[in-house]
Length: 377
Image (cartoon, rainbow, N blue to C red; front, side, top):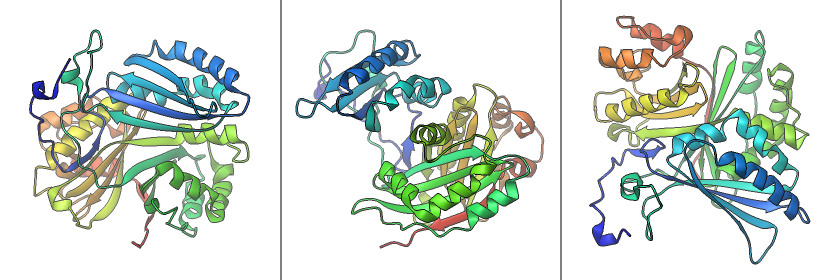
């Protein structure tokens, strides 16, 4: 048993880092489920089938299913993972989309929460070394939740889609007393669309709020014929699968000391990873961002890394534009760093030693469509 007096002194983590999944800490996932009336047995059978598959997923440690003693329709699923990356790789996979489909017919609502383990009391789990896997210190956040959606449109429809996405009335930023939309930024790279949002409060409540706005629904209906992946927003299952596949979680965010309160130009860079290397690429970029945060001369004020499968996107607030200092913008300040990135990038995005890094920036640069900040109340 590890007592408070036996714990080593907490290491001070940089206050610039407000979010990261790459510190090696154990992950606790909490899923709150509201089951349809009379569907408890159906839900239990679907869960048991799902659980037998999850147990074999690399990185999975344990799982518990609990039912409320006050309301039998309320269930709680908790799972523990060796760290965040293996969980994210699984939960964002096509395998996961298929595995959870049987649950959709028997639940009204779900809410997923993910936590790094910071402190622990009681007996140590067999075969684990908790003190080595706990988050060393609390992270310092800024109260903003960052998330993104990505999807592709049919080649040849890019200009039409860009116009549709740019021409709409912004939704009401206030969701409720505790939640508001702060900023929405849309970019395209070829036929890929990325919509990044910043929310203060409850992300799920904000997403539902936006989806209910008639002007947003009109935009979604207008781009439907141009999507490479068909969807029917009137079919809950079709919409759920589409937005599950479109989810592009933020895996790292850093705000530099000189970026506190500073304004910069917003840009996005698209990094296509080689098959199976998306998470490694995102981690490498996160390491470069943390190192760059120590450099007061860096033009990067804020950087958020989004990743799903082989899709990696960096959303940047930059002082002086992307071309002013391409090596620092890319986080590639020596030949070794260029070589490390080369092994993970795919296609024409791959970097070779000695190339003009301005050309690399140009290849990765995403076309801005719209960037809207909500006024502060």
